[in-house]
Amino acid sequence: MSTTSLLSRPPARRCGQQVFVLREDPDERDEFFVLLVDSAHRDGLVLPGGSAEQDELPHLAARRHLETQTGLVIALRTILTIDYVPAAKDPEGVNFVYAGGMITPRQAEAVGHHQPPEGIRALRWVPQFRLREVMADEEYRRVDDAWDAWEHGAGLPLLVRGVPVPVG
Image (cartoon, rainbow, N blue to C red):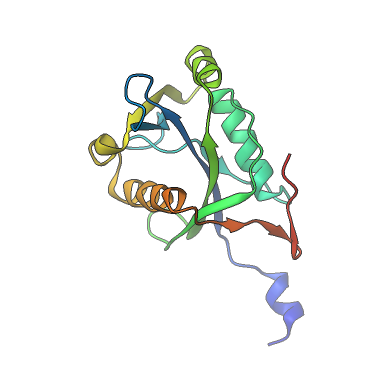
């Protein structure tokens, strides 16, 4: 089969972009909270994010969803984890989780005042030890892996046609 015929009918595949954002607990310097979204369309809490549109750069899709859902504008370049989801009730998909990093107290306060769009019931800061209680299993495993990568300084730079995406 030629490359031309393969590309003329590419498979349907979802491409999800999510962002892992942390803040320090103001009372416990060694305790961190991850920012999660309570979506009307999902069971359990999830990372902020959504699908990339056709021809939209993935990190810009992640940034767009993060800003719309939370009010945060963060440069995204590092991927903490990639999660392949086989077809089941939805088409197969690939989810990229970006390092949003540790935000400042001022940014965390701004998130608290942000009005999320329709379909988002609330934004929640959840400590690591409570994640399993508030997330669906596959979402929890994705966040747990991203947390592990973040703690160990692991991650992959995003490349576009072999060139690292600039920070900023």
